[in-house]
Length: 178
Image (tube, rainbow, N blue to C red; front, side, top):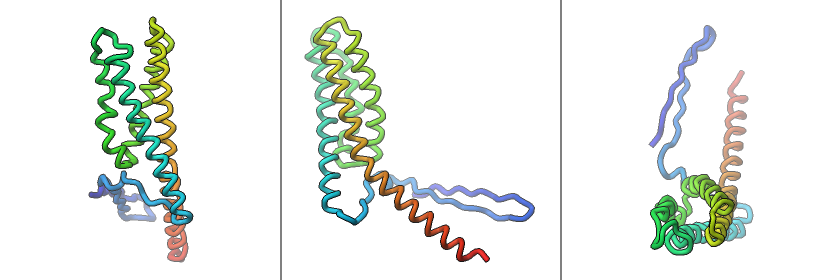
């Protein structure tokens, strides 16, 4: 699917319509292939970064559930705060498949969990709850950096392809301009 936008150029020297088509399909968020040079080593490093990010997300989900149900619940027997793991549980299948868009938004969402863990670690009355808060903040921070490390090579490769395309388009325009 494409989103198409048109912009009319209104100037006394130039008349015309400029059209731009932008892809909006879900296939855009799948990982793009990295550059071919030293591809096997890059693929191994990419798989390693992906496994680390997935393991940390699973650990964060498990820690949130354990903390809110068993380790330091607000009420004996657990609390509804365990539901705060739900967004990550919903995102887990896509993160396991390596969907860049999902990894990106979970990396943004995890910043809230880092803040929650720090606030809990600094202000809770019980030592057990403070330690649990700091642990949540540590796991969430580790996931944040692992997610960034996983996404970064794809973003760099995309920017390099975009620059190459723009350079090629500029060269074609220069040749066609009298």
